[in-house]
Length: 73
Image (cartoon, rainbow, N blue to C red):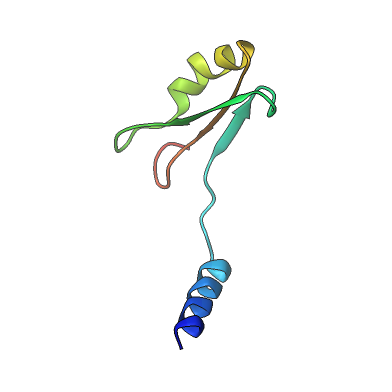
């Protein structure tokens, strides 16, 4: 019974209609990763993307950023 419950939970999560999130990556994926998680409600990753993401990628980092659900892009 326990395994049946977990299977049904997994199946529901797998087949659920999800929501797309905005994400973008800069630099070479083989470099050290930096994952940017923006703060606060109503904020977005846009300011970081415009001002800093490419500069970090140019310094040898793989920069990944995304906007949380319902915020930003």
